[in-house]
Image (cartoon, rainbow, N blue to C red; front, top):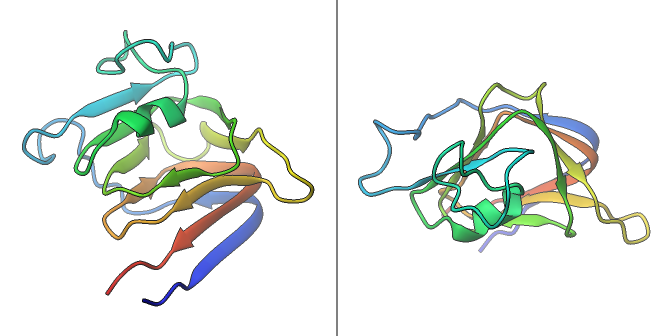
Length: 140
């Protein structure tokens, strides 16, 4: 397997074709989880009224085919690397300017924010701040 990867340092905007799996058009039986800065991780995340607070909490629940929709605001990634290692969609509601994924963990000069490590994963509409992201080429 070819393990090429790219790491970008600084403020990076991830913009890709936004494939909306939020409702109609998503995979049959797929679940949409919501993340809002005013949410609670104890919530189920199934609606905006019961949104999760952290992206990591919603990603942990998601399985292949699910979507995690992230609301506007700065979302701090408290661990070193939020890893997307399943075929889910992680999308923002309003594009990269208002949706920020920010490093909240620092070990020496390594400040990981987002690692995408699945061929069917989609990440779209975020600004990465104060850290790095990695995209692992897991294609055939």
